Image (cartoon, rainbow, N blue to C red; front, side, top):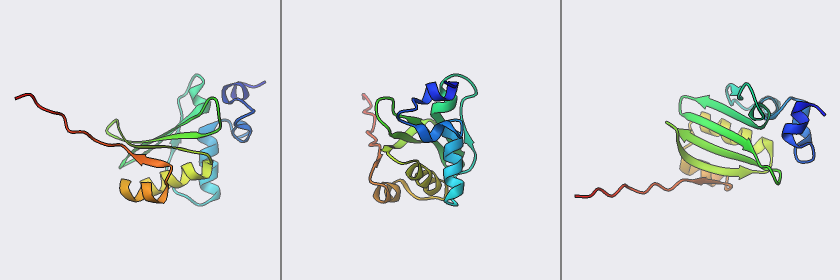
Length: 130
């Protein structure tokens, strides 16, 4: 078995093996559906190079990783390192659609309506002792 097969778990992600992992498969899916998701990066070493992807835009970063026990794609939308929204998609096309919408300026509120599997993170103000 190849490194990519072992890292991905062929049973859950057979469609990601041939392209070489999550990042290249996500790029191919976006291209096939004419979605602009920008450059897709992955760590250069270790298991993460097959099982995670990052898409950077002026608005922030879309981080994607794979579920280990079941097939799903975990999505985090981050601005300045803070998770603004997260969700689990079951289809790689959904991941590409979320990334493209985020990149083109869709607000978090619009995004969570359009993609019900995404949830905006609640912000709680910090209480100041005074």
